[in-house]
Length: 203
Image (cartoon, rainbow, N blue to C red; front, side, top):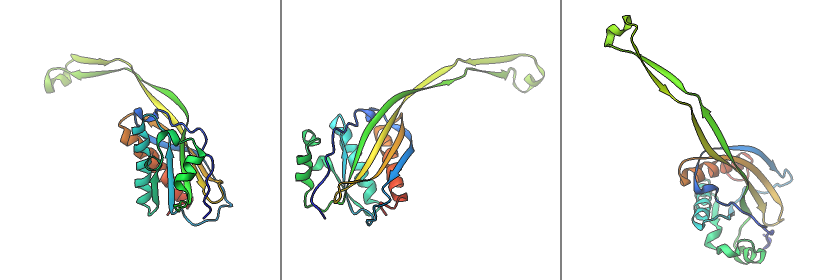
């Protein structure tokens, strides 16, 4: 396998994982149909995040789910300090000769706030027990309208072939953010892994 890798460029996942998601949806994807290689064996996982803890959670979850499909994954933070993430030379020096056949990169494209309005309602209960059925007396409970806000992160996941340095697959995902960090990461990564499997890029 050629010992070279593309320049990753300024990839920023930012702070989308400060909260977490309950659902993730694939909105678009593309695959290089000319790529006729075998399913990936060893993947270098890159997710530039702030704070560093979020980067580690994201990368380790990819590694865990890749391994569940018999694919070796390696978190970039284990080989690269944060300040070296954007350096082509830094990446190449760490992965050269280590048998990686792909690099998986996650970046944040956009983040927006969604607002859901819930209408108010009136609930009535008959007073006086069973005989209230024959009475006109009722007790009413009024619930006022409420508004719920949550974040939606638009994330892109790119997979590059290390031998050719070409993009072989890309997917764009929308992730609703509300809940715990681990739930957010698990939902997003699970959808990426399922998409890669459906394209036969991993077992």
